[in-house]
Length: 392
Image 1 (cartoon, helix red, strand yellow):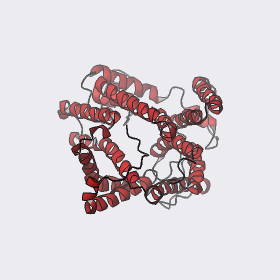
Image 2 (image 1 turned 90 degrees about the vertical axis):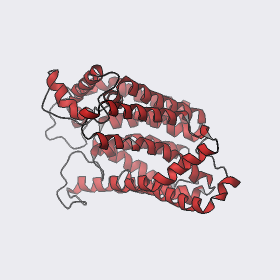
Image 3 (image 1 turned 135 degrees about the vertical axis):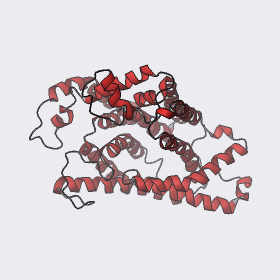
Image 4 (image 1 turned 60 degrees about the vertical axis):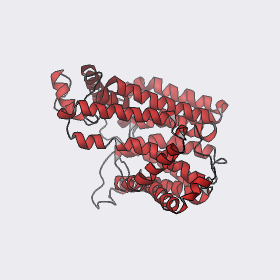
């Protein structure tokens, strides 16, 4: 796999289409700026990435394939394409029983944009002006984290919502994008930011360290404000791995600490469960109090039953939530009237959506992605492999 950090010069064939290249290049750059600005601030801003990247992104993929450079598409991307195909076929088989089948099938485009984005990153790096093009994107990303957490901190401390002008009264703050989106996104991104800091001598050309450190500090605070327990655990384990990959001797202690917390989690849950009335918003007791008898156990059970009912075809992409109440009623599960939109686990969610073949596709994608980043070594390995660990 060609490392995305390479900066190969444009070939003579590529320079023939220089005018179109320039327009496409600017669109790709603007698209990544939208993505960097919107991940932790606004879904609407992220839409700019999709609009700007679609045509030039598909053109970049077509160009690579046209010149016979099929190996430019890594195996992990092929596995992701297969997963997309499996989910689309599942939708086709379940079309009549799906809720909003066309809309949910169209949402598979977001997986495709992940592949297109890879080619966009490569193209930016090939222009041999990393500091000019990539550094602004990463700076915007860091600023968006700082802005989102600052908003949450202000609301938490003053009780005033800067966005709506209303009373800010919630014990879980999610910045500008909401608790779940911000919390789980930050749980995956924080280890990546830590890796950039530890290997700052390798990425000084495209990282502003004046913004990176505040982003790490505020991102950590923002993660705890969300009280997303799975995201906190993911960040802990993945960050430990980052330190270990950077320096095995120093990292062993953190890896052992992370594993200890993971193994002791049931004991922490039991000891922390209880009445949280009067507890502060950042109380550990409040974080773990409702895990005992947590609804996720029922959600996991329902997802398992959904996979068992339709192991090959699944029930269609994003359909688990629409079947959740019905599954609980049919199997006499807890709180039959309480609905849910997601299985709270990507393997169970994809399994319910596209059956066992979907789960195999998901495992193949993540496994090949980890293998490619591990084989790349250096910075890509240190920030990429822990990112996947956080996802898993």
